[in-house]
Length: 163
Image 1 (cartoon, rainbow, N blue to C red):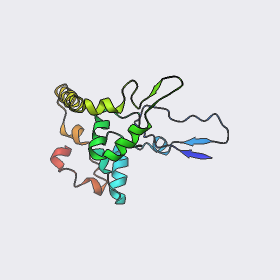
Image 2 (image 1 turned 60 degrees about the horizontal axis):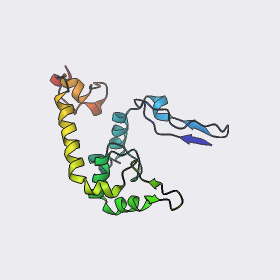
Image 3 (image 1 turned 30 degrees about the vertical axis):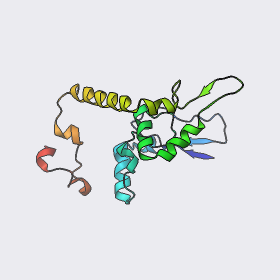
Image 4 (image 1 turned 90 degrees about the horizontal axis):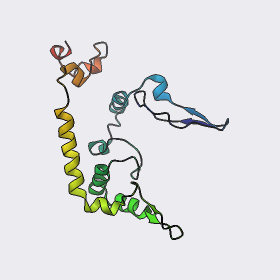
Protein backbone atom coordinates (compact mmCIF):
# COMPACT_ATOMS: atom_id res chain seq x y z
CA UNK A 1 0.00 0.00 0.00
CA UNK A 2 1.27 3.45 -0.91
CA UNK A 3 -0.08 6.00 1.57
CA UNK A 4 0.18 9.55 0.20
CA UNK A 5 0.53 12.15 2.96
CA UNK A 6 0.01 15.86 2.26
CA UNK A 7 2.66 17.38 4.52
CA UNK A 8 4.15 20.42 2.79
CA UNK A 9 7.85 21.20 2.40
CA UNK A 10 7.91 23.98 5.02
CA UNK A 11 6.06 22.00 7.69
CA UNK A 12 8.26 20.91 10.55
CA UNK A 13 6.66 17.57 11.34
CA UNK A 14 7.23 13.97 10.46
CA UNK A 15 3.78 12.51 9.85
CA UNK A 16 2.96 8.85 9.52
CA UNK A 17 5.80 6.39 10.09
CA UNK A 18 4.96 2.88 8.99
CA UNK A 19 6.19 -0.08 10.99
CA UNK A 20 4.52 -2.40 8.51
CA UNK A 21 6.63 -3.39 5.48
CA UNK A 22 3.45 -3.52 3.35
CA UNK A 23 2.66 0.18 3.91
CA UNK A 24 4.92 2.77 2.30
CA UNK A 25 4.29 6.41 3.29
CA UNK A 26 4.94 8.87 0.45
CA UNK A 27 5.32 12.64 0.97
CA UNK A 28 5.03 14.18 -2.52
CA UNK A 29 4.87 17.81 -1.34
CA UNK A 30 7.97 17.45 0.85
CA UNK A 31 9.80 15.52 -1.88
CA UNK A 32 8.99 18.16 -4.52
CA UNK A 33 9.54 21.17 -2.24
CA UNK A 34 5.90 22.29 -2.48
CA UNK A 35 4.92 24.93 0.11
CA UNK A 36 1.53 26.30 1.18
CA UNK A 37 1.91 29.14 -1.30
CA UNK A 38 2.54 26.58 -4.06
CA UNK A 39 -0.54 24.57 -3.04
CA UNK A 40 -2.71 27.69 -3.17
CA UNK A 41 -1.26 28.54 -6.60
CA UNK A 42 -2.03 25.02 -7.86
CA UNK A 43 -5.61 25.29 -6.55
CA UNK A 44 -6.11 28.69 -8.24
CA UNK A 45 -4.58 27.57 -11.58
CA UNK A 46 -6.65 24.39 -11.65
CA UNK A 47 -9.88 26.34 -11.19
CA UNK A 48 -10.65 24.67 -7.85
CA UNK A 49 -9.77 27.81 -5.90
CA UNK A 50 -8.92 28.30 -2.24
CA UNK A 51 -11.47 26.61 0.05
CA UNK A 52 -13.77 29.12 1.78
CA UNK A 53 -12.90 27.77 5.22
CA UNK A 54 -9.44 29.37 4.96
CA UNK A 55 -11.24 32.66 5.69
CA UNK A 56 -11.74 31.44 9.27
CA UNK A 57 -9.44 28.43 9.71
CA UNK A 58 -5.68 28.11 9.64
CA UNK A 59 -5.56 24.54 8.33
CA UNK A 60 -7.51 22.07 6.28
CA UNK A 61 -8.82 18.89 7.76
CA UNK A 62 -11.85 17.49 9.47
CA UNK A 63 -14.42 19.80 11.03
CA UNK A 64 -13.70 18.15 14.38
CA UNK A 65 -9.90 18.39 14.11
CA UNK A 66 -8.48 18.38 17.63
CA UNK A 67 -5.62 20.61 16.45
CA UNK A 68 -8.02 23.53 15.96
CA UNK A 69 -7.52 26.62 18.06
CA UNK A 70 -10.35 27.68 20.35
CA UNK A 71 -11.24 30.56 18.01
CA UNK A 72 -11.53 28.11 15.12
CA UNK A 73 -14.05 26.08 17.14
CA UNK A 74 -15.99 29.32 17.70
CA UNK A 75 -15.94 30.06 13.98
CA UNK A 76 -16.97 26.50 13.15
CA UNK A 77 -20.01 27.12 15.35
CA UNK A 78 -20.70 30.44 13.59
CA UNK A 79 -20.26 29.11 10.04
CA UNK A 80 -21.49 25.53 10.47
CA UNK A 81 -23.56 25.17 13.65
CA UNK A 82 -24.69 21.70 12.55
CA UNK A 83 -21.10 20.43 12.35
CA UNK A 84 -20.20 22.06 15.65
CA UNK A 85 -23.17 20.31 17.26
CA UNK A 86 -22.15 17.03 15.66
CA UNK A 87 -18.61 17.40 17.06
CA UNK A 88 -20.08 18.34 20.42
CA UNK A 89 -22.19 15.16 20.41
CA UNK A 90 -19.01 13.07 20.15
CA UNK A 91 -17.83 14.40 23.51
CA UNK A 92 -18.74 11.92 26.21
CA UNK A 93 -17.94 10.98 29.79
CA UNK A 94 -17.22 7.30 30.34
CA UNK A 95 -19.74 5.71 32.68
CA UNK A 96 -17.07 3.22 33.81
CA UNK A 97 -14.14 5.53 34.52
CA UNK A 98 -15.89 8.93 34.65
CA UNK A 99 -13.14 10.22 32.32
CA UNK A 100 -14.30 12.85 29.85
CA UNK A 101 -13.48 12.77 26.16
CA UNK A 102 -13.27 16.32 24.81
CA UNK A 103 -11.75 17.73 21.63
CA UNK A 104 -9.74 20.21 23.70
CA UNK A 105 -8.16 18.61 26.73
CA UNK A 106 -10.15 19.53 29.82
CA UNK A 107 -12.44 21.93 27.96
CA UNK A 108 -15.76 20.69 26.58
CA UNK A 109 -17.19 22.48 23.56
CA UNK A 110 -20.10 23.63 25.73
CA UNK A 111 -17.56 25.86 27.55
CA UNK A 112 -16.34 27.22 24.19
CA UNK A 113 -19.91 28.40 23.58
CA UNK A 114 -20.06 30.15 26.97
CA UNK A 115 -16.66 31.85 26.46
CA UNK A 116 -17.10 32.67 22.76
CA UNK A 117 -16.68 36.46 22.94
CA UNK A 118 -13.75 36.17 25.36
CA UNK A 119 -11.99 33.71 23.03
CA UNK A 120 -12.47 35.96 19.98
CA UNK A 121 -11.32 39.06 21.91
CA UNK A 122 -8.18 37.25 23.06
CA UNK A 123 -7.45 36.13 19.49
CA UNK A 124 -7.80 39.72 18.26
CA UNK A 125 -5.45 40.96 21.01
CA UNK A 126 -2.89 38.29 20.07
CA UNK A 127 -3.13 39.29 16.40
CA UNK A 128 -2.52 42.96 17.29
CA UNK A 129 0.44 42.01 19.49
CA UNK A 130 1.99 39.91 16.69
CA UNK A 131 1.57 42.80 14.24
CA UNK A 132 3.11 45.27 16.70
CA UNK A 133 6.12 42.97 17.12
CA UNK A 134 6.63 42.52 13.39
CA UNK A 135 9.68 44.34 12.12
CA UNK A 136 9.46 46.51 9.03
CA UNK A 137 10.20 44.45 5.94
CA UNK A 138 10.59 45.26 2.26
CA UNK A 139 7.44 44.77 0.20
CA UNK A 140 9.14 41.97 -1.70
CA UNK A 141 9.26 39.97 1.55
CA UNK A 142 5.70 40.83 2.49
CA UNK A 143 4.20 39.82 -0.85
CA UNK A 144 6.78 37.21 -1.86
CA UNK A 145 9.33 37.30 -4.61
CA UNK A 146 8.12 37.56 -8.18
CA UNK A 147 9.35 35.02 -10.70
CA UNK A 148 9.82 37.08 -13.88
CA UNK A 149 10.12 33.87 -15.89
CA UNK A 150 6.61 32.87 -14.81
CA UNK A 151 3.99 34.86 -16.74
CA UNK A 152 1.40 34.10 -14.02
CA UNK A 153 3.46 36.17 -11.59
CA UNK A 154 3.51 39.24 -13.84
CA UNK A 155 0.17 40.54 -12.62
CA UNK A 156 1.04 40.14 -8.92
CA UNK A 157 2.92 43.41 -8.70
CA UNK A 158 4.68 46.00 -10.79
CA UNK A 159 8.40 46.03 -11.46
CA UNK A 160 8.94 48.80 -8.86
CA UNK A 161 7.76 46.51 -6.05
CA UNK A 162 9.85 43.71 -7.49
CA UNK A 163 13.00 45.83 -7.33
